[in-house]
Length: 304
Ligand code: ADP
Image 1 (cartoon, rainbow, N blue to C red):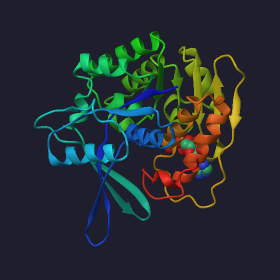
Image 2 (cartoon, helix red, strand yellow):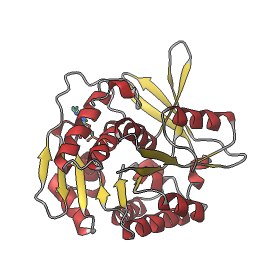
Image 3 (spheres, rainbow, N blue to C red):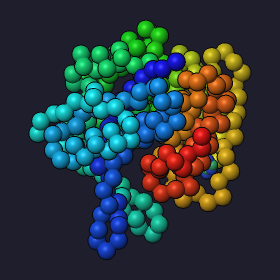
């Protein structure tokens, strides 16, 4: 059955060291990464569309061209005259990556300002995907707009998927962050948290605690990702299932592990796989991504 997945969030310009005082330019962002892997893994009769706001500068145009080149739909992306995209720089020091951000005035912060446009974009999709980073970049009124539309989508029977992706530096205060993450989960029927984040900010002691907490908020389906320890799934009233991760001898770069898992997982779910089968595919995709440098690896490298 054909359909459309709408991924909502921020894509940024990424600058990384390329030696000799040179910087390499790329584009990335959690929700874009998931759209990329969804495009690579979903059946071709599904559209994968990205929803954000960009400026009208050359960098914004290049960003859109990159998405289009990957087969990700950009028609719903609003272009705001005079704005520019957010930017981050990765610096390597003693093998550790440090991130510096310039995103306070990024066009993407305005992605939910046109509520009618957001609503019609959501109306045209069967799966709506967003994250805690999407919520973290928005002003409180824009968070309310986005969550109201997500709740409306859920109530009308759409699949609303939320990855909490908790990033404290995006939020002004911790209680508001935790409350808003919970509101994001409540507006969704499938939540895909990473255990490390949930343990650090909600104090969960194990995956079962994360599942119980989201179930108590009324979330029907929960998939807790826990790196090499695999994933734990609680779908509807079915018993909790554990799906192991693939064994990876040499991890090169874990950037996008969770995002790529999500894309691979959803691609199998829409084709009628069981949640456990879908999670195995998500794990196979993520295990391939972490064997390579960068957030976005070539679709040719991914398992079929
Ligand atoms: P996030 O990137 O959101 O923190 P995780 O670290 O839980 O998410 O990783 C997501 C998925 O990537 C895991 O469920 C697993 O399938 C895969 N993965 C991550 N790290 C490893 C690893 N060291 N070995 C094998 N698979 C891994």
